[in-house]
Amino acid sequence: MLSVMVYHSGMTRGGFLGVDMFFTLSGFLITSLMLEEYAATSTISVPAFYARRALRLLPALFAFLGVWGIYFLVTRPPAFWPLGGTYLALVALYVANWAGIWWYGLGIFGHTWSLAIEEQFYLVWPLAILLLIRGVKRPARIAWILLVVAAASAVWRFDVALAGASMRRIYWGTDTHADGLLIGAALAFFVSGGRLVLFTRGLGAARCVSAVGLVALLVTAPHVPGYVFGITMPVALATALIILDVLNGGSWIARVLETRELGRIGRISYGLYLWHFPVFYELGALKGPGEHAPYVHTLLAWAVTFAAALTSYLLIERRALAYKDRFSRSHRVAQTGQIGDHVPAQPGQVSAIPISP
Image (cartoon, rainbow, N blue to C red; front, side, top):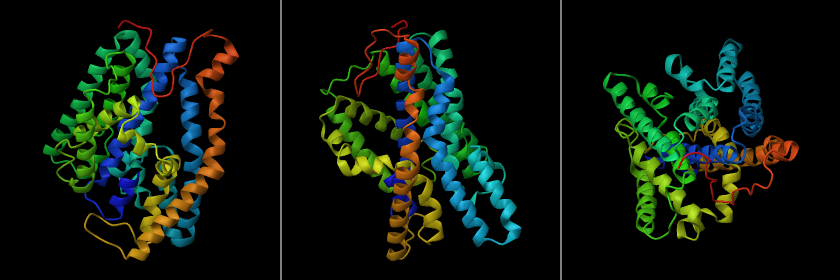
C-alpha cells in the first residue's frame, strides 16, 4: 500500500507493482483459509465466505462512496450528477474495471479497478476450489494447473497488446491481470499439500534476492512496456518466496514486516487504498512518475488519507469485523459439532487437505 501511495505521489516508477504484490498475498491468504476449512469439514461454505468478504469490504466501501457522493453533489454542477451516480453504482457493483475499459474513466474512483478484479475473482473462486479438489484431488497437481493458468494470463496479456488493445484494456482486464492471484493460490495448494517443506536452509539466498529485487522494481520498473512484457510474474513469484520466508519466521524480512509501525499501517491499509486516490486528486498531489506536487500538498494529502483511513477502521471496519466470527469455521463447528476433536492450524501454517497426496 505504501508503495502505491508513493507511486501516486510521483516519487517512484514501479510502485504500481504493489497491487500485484497484494494480489499474490491475497490469493495465498484467502485460498489458505478455504483449504483449512475444507480440511476440517470436507466442504467450503460458500455463503459464509461471501458473508465474511462482505463484512470486510462493504461497510468501509459504502461509507467511502457516501462521503464522495456527497462531495460530488456539492462540488459539481447538477448536469454532472447522473454521471456521479453512475460512478458510484459501478464501483459498488465491482465492475469498475470493465466499465473503465469499455466506457469511460472513472475519475476520482479510477483506482477501484483493482478492487473489482479481486472481487470478481473471489466471486467464482470458492466454487472453483471445490471443483478442483473434488475433480483433480492432488494439491500439487492443482497448484501446477494454477501456475499454468497464471502463465496463460500473462501470455494472453501480451497477445492482447500485440493486437493493439489500449493500455487500460491490458492493465484493467480481469483476464489479463489474474497472474498474481493465481500464483498466490497455487502457493497455498503447494503448502497445503505438504510439497513445500518450509526449511530456512536454502531459502536465505532466495529471500534476499527477492527482497532486493522487489525494492528495485518498485523504485525503477516502468509501467509501459514492463507490464505488457510480464513484469508482474517475477514480482508475484518473489512475493511468494517472501511469504514462505515469513511462514518460517525468524528471518530479518519477517522481523521487519512484523514491526509495530508496519502492523498498524497494515490494519488500515484497505482504508488507505480507498481514500488515497480521490484525496490525492482533489488536493493536487496525484502525480505520475517524475512529476512532483508542492511538498505541502503532498504532505497534506498523506495526512488526510491516513486520518480518513484510521477513522474508517476505528468507526466502521473494526465494528463490522466483530461480526465475521459468526461466519467463521470455528463458529459453525461450535454450532453444529461437525469436527469433533479437530485441532486448528497454528498461525503461519496451512492444514493439509484430506485428499490424495
